[in-house]
Image (cartoon, rainbow, N blue to C red):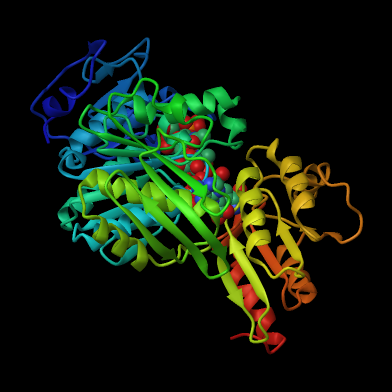
Length: 501
Ligand SMILES: CC(=O)N[C@H]1[C@@H](OP(=O)(O)OP(=O)(O)OC[C@H]2O[C@@H](n3ccc(=O)[nH]c3=O)[C@H](O)[C@@H]2O)O[C@H](CO)[C@@H](O)[C@@H]1O[C@H](C)C(=O)N[C@@H](C)C(=O)N[C@H](CCC(=O)O)C(=O)O
Ligand SMILES: Nc1ncnc2c1ncn2[C@@H]1O[C@H](COP(=O)(O)OP(=O)(O)OP(=O)(O)O)[C@@H](O)[C@H]1O
Ligand SMILES: N[C@H](CCC[C@H](N)C(=O)O)C(=O)O
Ligand SMILES: [Mg+2]
């Protein structure tokens, strides 16, 4: 790729130094420590430091051009500086161009919302696969090309990694990609310039206020996904969510509104809903519901648990309709969908005791998980809730989660999640501020010991919810990651008690 082709993709405020338009570009880089020969270095003002401070380092490492928001006061005329309004946006655009605009060749489906992104993207991928559209996936559990799952550091990678992945997917024969779009990614322009064909909004509840500052700013970040859709695109929204209409206020795309009602309680149908799930029963084995749209209405038995998963299901179904698939093939895809690892994942012992591993790490997710368990457990069974909260993340959610656990459980065990750089005991103090119960309350900082306690207390008919870490296979303490897997520990305690099936 020549420099000229990259430059054409961004709006330049000023050019300083020598411009050799036909020079081939070796790579694009936004970390001076990774600059190689003929790299284009993008200087980004970050939260910890300012990439502009490392321009000299990038020049010394042989960068061919520097993209920046401020040209240094002194510079050598041999060096090329390209001044832009916004380095993060410029990075996204040149990354897209560098990887041959691969995302334009793919159908791109983006899912955003506080909870349900991983689950819903997984369901949409199953629907596309069932309709013989080879589809890549990008999200919290990693990225998938073919049958292979590869790890990722973040839910939505930076723009450079994203476009590299799109290119890889296209080369592997994918025709579509379904991806989680986090609010951090939207606010930090990781997805700027991607043309989304379908965007899905699951819900918006308390999380990440450490980063966004307020629910309004958090909602504004999510809204960007919908503001940028074209007229031919589709916006699939959970119309029951308080923020749904805000999301699509300035959206030009076709809007598909989804909802879930309880059929037996004869809940009133909202007339503006396009795709509705009417639920007849929620059990530990799954959910029976009619999915109704303007042309069809059919009863199905889904394997997923709880009302929140019906929202995920109905939105995935609506995304399938937006794609133009036959309803039967959409349902076939949903039926084939394997449960997502660590999302309401049941682990049973030989003597029929039940633990559930779930990734509920926000107040709303914890409340939904607990209310679902309450609905599907045997009447006299107790709910044992074990959870913690991640360090270096939103602190406000900690006492709220404590209160939700107290209101919805018989026994509470608070423990560590990923403390990261924070003092684990201090995190537990923050959670405990929301809990007033003294009986049947345990505070055990070591997560393995805490899980062992939960399983020791568990009797037949009870359900132990082991929340917060879901699919994660590590625990991060004091900045170091150790192997840790909730499910593995539950199974080993069951085995020790000679009860695992
Ligand atoms: C808040 C946030 O998202 N920060 C991201 C951001 O960091 P930053 O802008 O603060 O970068 P910085 O450390 O200040 O550095 C500024 C610039 O100087 C450069 N630099 C720095 C040092 C040097 O020697 N040379 C150099 O060039 C850096 O490469 C960078 O370009 O840009 C970095 C580079 O892309 C990211 O790695 C980093 O993500 C951090 C690791 C992170 O933890 N992000 C999480 C919170 C996140 O994104 N989570 C979301 C949400 C998940 C959910 O929904 O729950 C996700 O999508 O995963
Ligand atoms: N539609 C939903 N509404 C509310 N809670 C949900 C919904 N779907 C899933 N959950 C809860 O949230 C947890 C996380 O689900 P999931 O991983 O699908 O969300 P996510 O948005 O991808 O989360 P993350 O931001 O961490 O990537 C689940 O384990 C479950 O407890
Ligand atoms: N994507 C979320 C995941 C949180 C998972 C929880 N186990 C934690 O570590 O806080 C985040 O990075 O905030
Ligand atoms: Mg996710």
